[in-house]
Length: 85
Image (cartoon, rainbow, N blue to C red):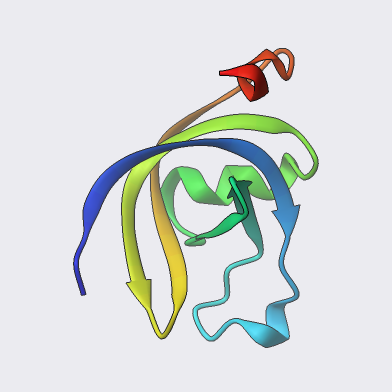
């Protein structure tokens, strides 16, 4: 598994628990890629930010075709002007 740092901007979306072996409860979606948030560290706080635009930085890894993100930090974006970039 290759792990690399990444920064993702997108909206926080809920993930049904029964479909994820790693127990991710939320994901951040950017450019049609779903980054499932690992439920540890700063990622736990994203559970309360569903439907909120965020910028998340952390370590990304892929397993069985699913992209996971271990969050090192995040910030809530005030608006969606980042969509225009």
